[in-house]
Length: 598
Ligand code: ZN
Image (cartoon, rainbow, N blue to C red; front, side):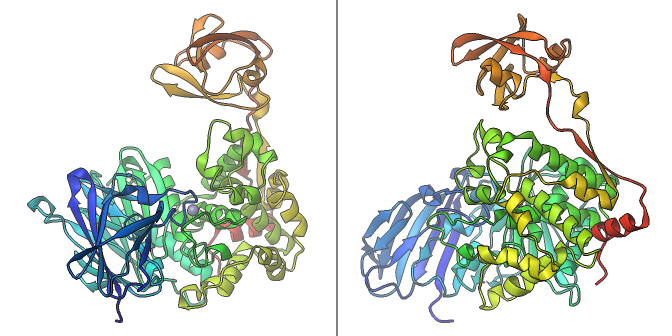
């Protein structure tokens, strides 16, 4: 191997949450080597400026210090120094999420984007990393989980791992600690399930059996004939905490965080809401192995991690992944069709709730993810639409349209397979071509034989509501909106703040908005009766639509009084019910929800 970039990472002081990283560059740039840390991590579209966690950094060569100059917030340049430049720095790791790095006495976790400076100009060389055990008897039983191939290490052991380039290095997070571990094969490929955190009586065999079904269904979706997975090995790494939820996709692994009570308990057979949510999250991140890690928008091929990468296509890469995550649970037999359509109805109600959907299209929401979806505030329901939620409904609407109009000959699966064959399958084999924005719509028409331009104009680039009631009918699924029975309300979402009732969001055009109430106000009384975090619904239940109420609120420390006319809570309450079905609807619905024979 010619002059690989070499890192050593040591959990040097778990109590102070410090990793120490040593970076050796055998052949630095003679003009002065430049080093840079990413400003964002792929999959999470927000500028995070990871370099702010570098505490101390110095350089040396042949035993002498080499001056380092800071060029911008995440870039350093070493003075010209001949051979064997060594950089040493500490990284503060105290972010309990899947996006950065975390270290204490219970475990260590890092993404390469938080800890490994890129050696500018050498990103395509092999990158070797020596992962060291922290000092002390209490860490003797720690193991390592990562999708990186071992160079000089036993599987799950400390030692040296290798990445073919910088992109693979930072796409392979590392977990270390005393985790629970199980392994299964999906269509012949080994998959590890790693659970860190205290989870009494975890039913690992059930978790493994369920994940295997989901993984095999997804592999078969993209490669129905060969059943060939895109990676040689895969790692699910989960940190279980008291209360948490999140996941981030990588090319051969995923980092997840969940509530420990969402994981299955020995002896329990039913599908709890929490466990279904966790399986849905695993299914989502696993689907990204194809959709976004290999089929990518061209702006991510390659990534520019110094600044925002703008694409209008996140409705496809995140939205369709959200469409397929629950659908694959149904197709794997883990949930039944009634449960599946209940989840779809929940998404529909969430999207219809905010007037932001009439102002921002999913294409615009994708483009502005950096400043809007990822940086939401109290006005977000009135200003933006989620490319995840509405994007998943775009996926459903397209799938229903294609299946109905081609009488079941084609489906969204065929479109995904074509994207896979054309852009994804060879992505890491040197092809490396991303999907251009203009190619997407043409590809839909090519695969399905339909003319879908109007659909994209209205529902992807435009802000119209998807005609799902109409599209679901031929599938024998009944849409009903029960909002006419709604109770009177103020058109707000409230949040508990200590004992106080805080107005979290004010929905545009609702009674609170018309009366003068603002998000952030503390609601203290309704018609002279004290409001607490717990009793607002009870107080309002004694009134009828049209009743005038005096609301007292504190805005900052100023008491204000407003008069509000109660209105029927206009929030959508859509239910979807699969009906006993005529033969044509049965065929369509079965094809949607059951494993496809191809
Ligand atoms: Zn996602």
